Image: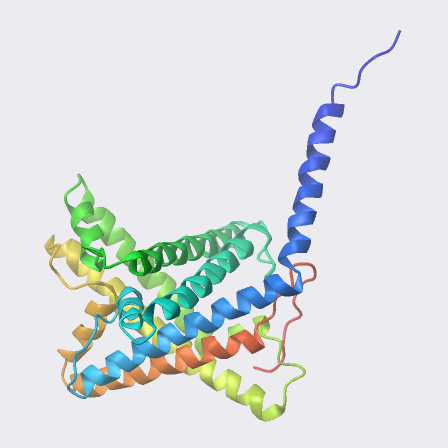
Length: 298
């Protein structure tokens, strides 16, 4: 008489899933996928350079496109050979979205499975999905002018119309401020260096990488903090027309004492962040297999 092993099917299924994961992990770590993700990092940097330039132009008295990632994409599409440029942007954004999902699923940055690690990986997934949404917007511009591109106030208006919507918008704003605050601290303390492959770079290049990252990340964190503050204000006043999003935060700076100076500084900081992000196409560490050693450059 033979007895079947009841755990055999489960073991087989686990082995199949494990093997599929290893295959996907190896593909994610391949040279061409790495190059694809580096290209996405470069395109993201270009978008922030244009965004910062728009803020700087407004500070100097010239108002152009909306100071959001969507506005930048629309502006790129209006240039000569705009359709070709938008295709390049769509490919770059898709690759950065893929990098977000890879960071979430395969954990190349080794955040682990602790509560904090899982939270960070969820953040990576959210980033990937957000950039996937920008891919959809870009494809829409390629297909033809969109009748309406959702603005930053649209989703807040929809939430405020729901029961307890103001509380939810306020909660999102508080979380936004907290995440931005963490980004500011990490930027100031140069925690980003551990994710860069700078050991083989010249000393001058390493110093510039740290300077660009510190200034750019801190500036972006401050602007994102302002976005969170405006979200909280929107919830407090229950006013869906209250300026929010990146555009609202930058315009809010303009309305402050010495507003043009503050907005110019924010624009230069965002340009710096864009240059840093674009240069991360050269500097970033993509390693799905092995833990990234901690750098002592900071």
